[in-house]
Image 1: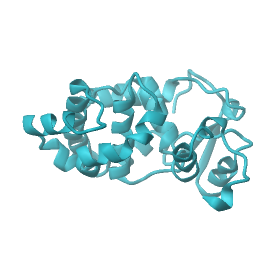
Image 2: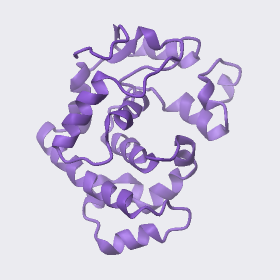
Image 3: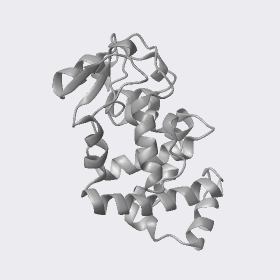
Length: 208
């Protein structure tokens, strides 16, 4: 990251080194790896009611608790695993969230069985292209939009929990389906230069 120290960034990532590294190396980069997709999604589940900085600080704990976010292993978890996770030092002690991660792993398996890959399913909503909303370039970002609502509804039909349209919108930003870096950020242009992008107006009523 040293070579990027003097480059302009989105202001939200400047609070600590982990947030800055996450912004520079992961956030908004188009993601097509199912294990990382599941990790990001389940970190969003764990975040509900909390904040992303806390999730990054506890990321190593999550990896320890959930076998590196291996969805096949997690899908087979039982009561002993739940007790182990809740007893792990530093873990968020929400039984409902832990149970949701396990439940979602099983839903993730079913969706993969149907589509071949979760990434193929998710990127299918945008025809494989990162969406750049022209109204977002100055940092005026919504909590949700028509796309996140549509995907959230679809995920709920597959049984996923804790993945409402606000949470899904955050995931779409994280995995690069939506490029919400501010225009002055060095990652904004880098993503435009290296990945297929479709530009759209900032419209809550759009259809994709």
